[in-house]
Image 1 (cartoon, rainbow, N blue to C red):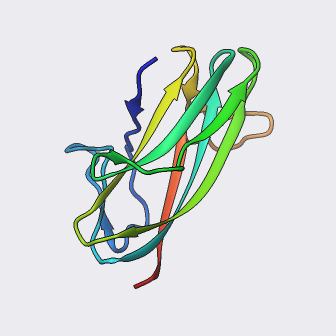
Image 2: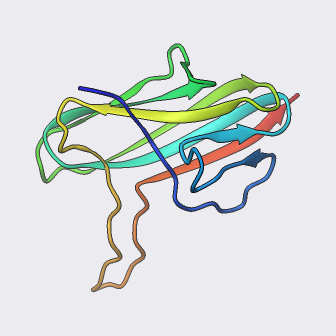
Length: 133
């Protein structure tokens, strides 16, 4: 099993960070030094597998940042929600990395539904808040 950087196609409400959807789309760049609360929720599906997601800062895996969710079968969906507090300097970048014991399992987008009508489910949502200097 290999690790895979998670990339982002949409930016909403960006403040004190920068992110490009075309150049290094896995990188979220911090603009001001401080402590940051990073929360992500990842929609998991695909096959029986253990799916791990962790934080990488400036290309180095952050100690004790890995989280695992176990999918029991191909009809299983899980929402993995994790929060971290991480110190950062201006110019530091964060990435989320995933791996799975089965290449058919991982983060997935779920299309909008009908009956009742409901919006799509993004594969991952990342929220970053500066909490202190």
